[in-house]
Amino acid sequence: MVKVLPASRAAHAHARVENASHYLNRCYAVERHLMRTLAARFVDTSQWDYKRQLAQDMWEASRHADALRTRILELRYPRRDVDKKHHPDMLALVAECAKGANAEEFIAGVYGALLPELLRAYRGYIELTDALDDAPTVAILQHIIADIEAQIARMRALASQVSPGLFDASAEWQDYLRQVCASFGGISGLEPPTPKPAEHLLAARPAYTIGRSVERDRRWRPALFHLPHENKYDVEGRTAWQRIESLDKRVAMQVWSAISHFNEIWAAEVVAASMWDFDNQPWDFYLDLARWAWDEARHSTMGFRALEGWGWDVPDLIPWGNALYNAMGPMPPIQRLALLHFYEEGLLRAGTKQVELRILESALDDGSAQDMDFDWADEAIHVSYGYTWLRHLLGDSNAGKEEMTRLTDEARETVARFVVEHKDLQEAKLAPYFDRLYDVIAAMLLEIADDHLDIQWAPVVADEEVLKAL
Ligand SMILES: [Fe+2]
Ligand SMILES: [Fe+2]
Image 1 (cartoon, helix red, strand yellow):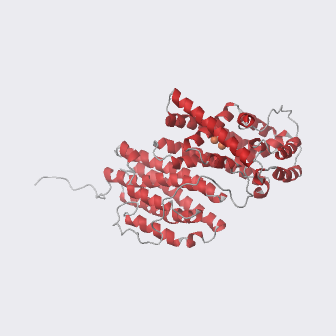
Image 2 (cartoon, helix red, strand yellow):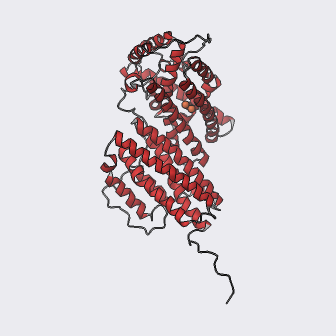
Image 3 (spheres, rainbow, N blue to C red):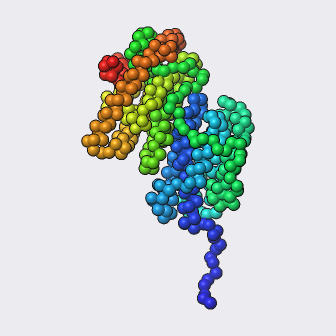
């Protein structure tokens, strides 16, 4: 016999560091792969309200995964395992969720089954652990729980407006996903596993793959381009735009920046697709790209908010193009990132944002100026993301730099060829939009005191050199 004091207090057998890190690692795998899946399904979703919500929730999932990963490493979990050995059951669970047959079913599966299961796992963890010893985890999980509760509430509210009955119509799919989750012992892994629902009618679908072209929300007419600088062959479009410019360069900048922002959705799509296409990159690659894609979706939303703020019927008046993403569809993912970086770096280096901001201030358009100011801050970050990760992917050497130039030049030619091949289609014509818009704008104009700003601005031609060469 030996002598001891009685235990100072009872503790749950599971609430020890090793068990905690394994539990959290399952949650991390779900958040990380949910983030990539939301990115891909954001690209594939055309309905605008769903699309921007998926982008936001994708970014939040990246923040959750990052906080969990940091905490797991604090809990003595080996770094190589947290980065390489993602829990196979959790990957299988998210891979099943990705297979939703369309945007509605996908949403019902994630927000009706997967996220509620994740909430259950987080709440279960807080029940098990010690709020003093494991306080940092509790704080992280309380934050994540609040985020996910808000995500579910927002998406349910949205669905009740956009597609009433969405969750009821996909009850079978949600039930199937819950059975898949239960077969792994739940996300916690602590529940007795149930048999795999292999015989379920919705089982054994082929693996999800991301689309290589996008469609826009059906409320808009099909459009390829959004402003005349994209397509030099659209002479009528340019003339119609010049009529708007002739009202005042300030007016043109107000409208141009809103339409341009709204159409930045293609940049969000390019970055989000890269998060799916590259499946074996360092964690920071995904964290940065999640922010980049969400920023571009926010910029698009900024434009939409400004256009709606003028009281306009946006689907009727504003072209919402898909040419850029679709022209890039056949390219390898690294080439799409290289081209986006080329455009962004060029705009930032030219100081375009400062000029645009000054004109919006001169127009006394506080909302648009604020949008542009934050956009400018975001874009500076994006250029550093592009620089960092393209250098990582291509190698920090002369050969890497040459390959970067080659990829960019080839991509510019591909986009230019796409413009030539599509220039005569009805959806390549912008004059009908700008003619309608001219009347709407002209009826709303205000007079303000002239600040005599010397306005040196014309819409940026993204790639005039390549177009000239054709
Ligand atoms: Fe942007
Ligand atoms: Fe950007």
